[in-house]
Amino acid sequence: MSSPDLQLARRTERLKSSLVRDILAAAARPGMISFAGGLPAADLMPQLPLEATAAPALYQYGTSEGEPAFRTAVAHWIGETGLQVTPDQVLALAGSQQGLDFAAKLLIDEGTPLLCEGPTYVAALQVFQLFGADIVCAPLGAEGPDLVALEHLLATKRPRAAYLIPCFQNPGGACYSAAARVAVAELFDRYNVILIEDEPYRSVALDVDHPMTPICSLLKRAPWIYLGSFSKILWPGWRMGFLAAHPALMPHLVRLKQAADLHTQRPGQAAVAHWLNSDTRGRDLERLRAGYRVRRDAMQAALERHFGAIADWQMPRGGLFFWLKLRGELQATRAMLDRALEQGVAFMPGEAFFAQPAEGHQYLRLNYSRATPEEMESGLATLARCIRTAQDLQSRPQPA
Image 1: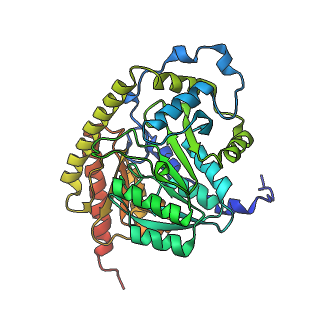
Image 2: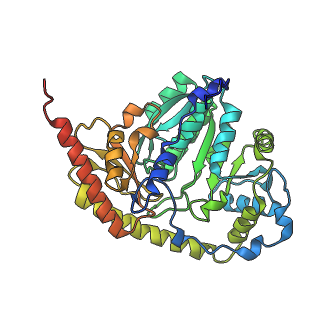
Image 3: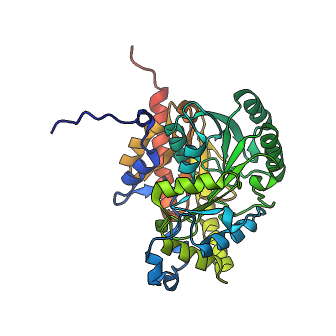
């Protein structure tokens, strides 16, 4: 059958396949040890409250903004972080990725300057690039962005908005210090830059000694959108997320929700609201963190054995990922991926997390939430061998 002559929107030329989703498809093969995705551990999730989803009325159409019980419970949940919002400022989402889509539709025209961290979340890059953003990146350290570089970009590039992940940043693992949060808020107020603050990993805090005050709560002038997800702590198959926003932005975001899918599925909202209001919530989160702490420490030990001589990293204080930089000159971790998959190991190459992929050629991201300690030991030993083989091949003299 011949291919049809399609006339598509020009932006489809910028539509890139998600490398994460592509690798996850490969990682589903039997026997594969996967460090690739950000999938949470099924055994650490709370039991699904089926009684909360049993009412037949939940299976009728609902309001675009979300269920009143869900919006109220989420407003209280957000308030516990230090960001005070009303239920009217909360919008139920089909996963926080939908919030990124809405923010892009609301704020980005083709060529709009947008500031991100470097590196940043691969699926955020995907949606921002689809809508034509001119992405500029501020270098990111363990406790926040380089403030001098950040202010230079704000002053010279004049971005309309900025996208930040201050708690256990994906992929780099950074957790902004209290001082960095205050300084970033002051800069955004000074330059009146809209902040998109994404916090899917806030609840997976393992070793943090300061309150992770949302930057949105520190803003005095600049508008903001605050994104959150329950997919890392509760039943990701429900795809339950939320946003809260500055009152001036909320009407536009609600209309975008109406145009996208009418409303978020109601049974999931009921299940999440039930959990948020339950007396087991604190125990569930402590169990989850304890389980992830054990797995994080197991990967740290395995990395020290197998990667200690070939890479540098910092043990994450939360979130689901290790971020490694290989020593020496390796042309691209992406080039090693097929070899690793052939050997039964999946990982995420660093190039996917940079607006300019060449900046990530020595990096790789490893997820620790799904593999057992035995799989970590075997899989990391195999991956280290693949890296050494690639480095050896690269260092050999090429025939004339």
